[in-house]
Length: 367
Image (cartoon, rainbow, N blue to C red; front, side):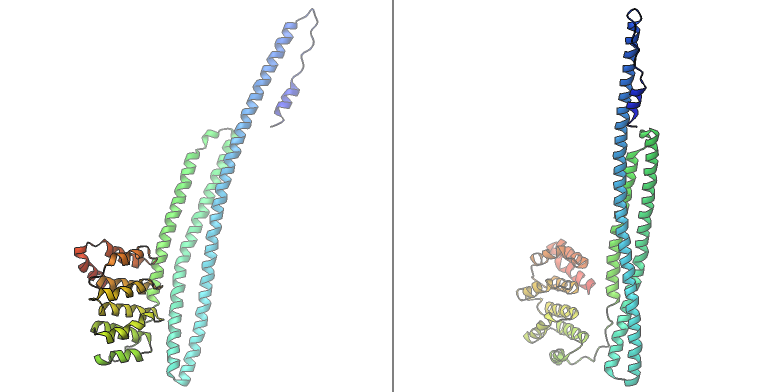
């Protein structure tokens, strides 16, 4: 196309020299006509070049959009590959747990020792937890596959529209392509994908919370309750975390003086989060009428790394009387745990005249 002007220029024959006696004016008119025609052809060529440049720009934009969609598709494929790898790892752990279970059962039948029975119970819990994780991963895998299929379909639609646009540009009918509609459809597709992604994240968070609740180890049979005067001694001698939790809660319900307080306070730094949560709940019951003494424990409890402990501390603080809750609980408005945020927002939105009734209802529902 760039050789057009030269071809036209070469095709124009030079006017013959006229004789002095002949038509000099006719030759000059023909030369002027040819020069005008040549200028018209040059203008048409410049317009065609400008249209071609615009077409190249639009094609480059479409190619950039296609590259972005391809990159997002590769990211989703990587995420799907990681999910499959996690499922395979869970299957391997399940097989290993089954082998350990069989081995422990054989050892239990041979020795019939108490330690072997406890090890068997622990392995069964691990197997149940691994099965729950596998089920959760298998539930998320179809969602990832559906997202990949949607991206592939949108990519095919994009390529089809680009091809149609290229044909329209080649035919010279550039206004036949509705770029506004094409961009609008792409924006709607992006919004739909973002909405689906947000819904998937919320469903994943709900499934994780259900999974954590489902894989929590069942409580062992409770030992016979000791007399009320021996609760402190029984708590000091308890070895199992579930027994410690039960005794801490009983001490909190029973109440008492400084003996009960000094017996419960060290358990607020226990290794097991369930024991720490029970200790803070008991401290709230023991110090519910002494807010000045209970406030430092609330500050330590809401800084705990475990969300279950923080929830119990917030509920204990809400049940205490005379405690200024707003300066204590406002930092938890941005807590990473959604349940902590929900309880804190509910307490902070409650008017002062209804605070005791609402806080009691929150504690009753959460307990």
